[in-house]
Length: 166
Image 1 (spheres, rainbow, N blue to C red):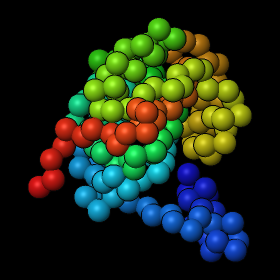
Image 2: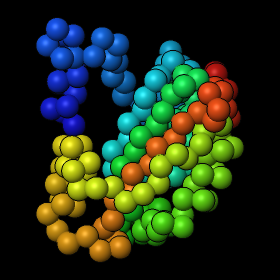
Image 3: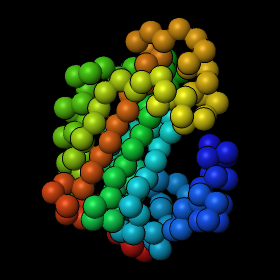
Image 4: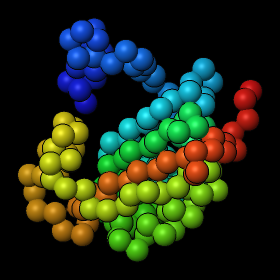
């Protein structure tokens, strides 16, 4: 992630992004300055409350994620729910049939689940995360599978956030 961030932060003439902004914040309390202004949110191998928010199980974290998006914004995530996550979050490894429930939960925030499928190895490797390297190095049974999720604003409308500005 650090390497990808460094590449993206380069000057535009060297392949950097012209409108890149990094923020360190929790999903439950995103920076107000970014709400409604973000074109793309990338979530890589979340755990804890961010994992629950990415799956729209934690409504406060989900609202924070949705509230960041501009009207045509997209959320892309690589999610792996392991036995360790299950113990800490009451989740089980994700299965194909979970997409319907995840989609219904995100619809309450104005986002449509447009992709929920096993992530191919090249997509996992491209994340350049240490967790991705661990997952790719070992056997991946159902408890170590990785899902690729994509969420888009429903019909170009701005996402609905249950979060109120303070």
